[in-house]
Length: 187
Image 1 (tube, rainbow, N blue to C red):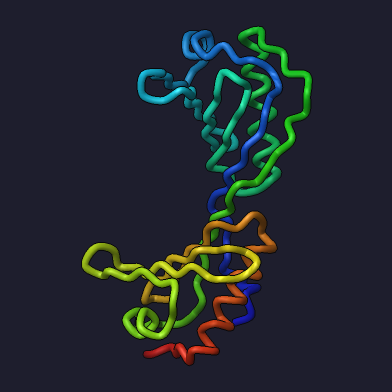
Image 2: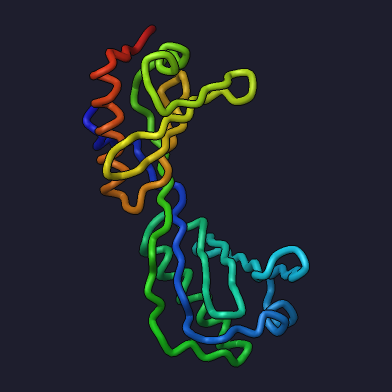
């Protein structure tokens, strides 16, 4: 396996941006559907849209965090929809928001049955407490700064990367670490 696994899927992209406009959160909660705002608990408004499926944290400063999308194209569509919703409450956004990717989460199957106890012993930067969680957490020390959830059936979740390319590099590097420490598949 070289890290370019066809089974690898982006399952979530988290971005941050700014609408460069003050946002009247109280008005949004009154006039827009699928919104939650409880300033005593959290200073941002939560808004969900269905198509593309996305959730926003919107702050009165105009800062926005978007999560739930699976591609940068979906990010752009979600932001367009958010700007349309803003227009409905007379908040005119005149900028094209500059997107900063904060995190890409991907899932994959590395086609190996793994002995997680063996991996926990052989590798460093590992957390494994099977009585609390069935997966092993492994932080890879490479340019991607990825963290993996690794399961005995060969399924993995890769998080902490900033792009699809980084996901594939991180998985390839994970396989290199497995080879270096002689982590083998078992039947």
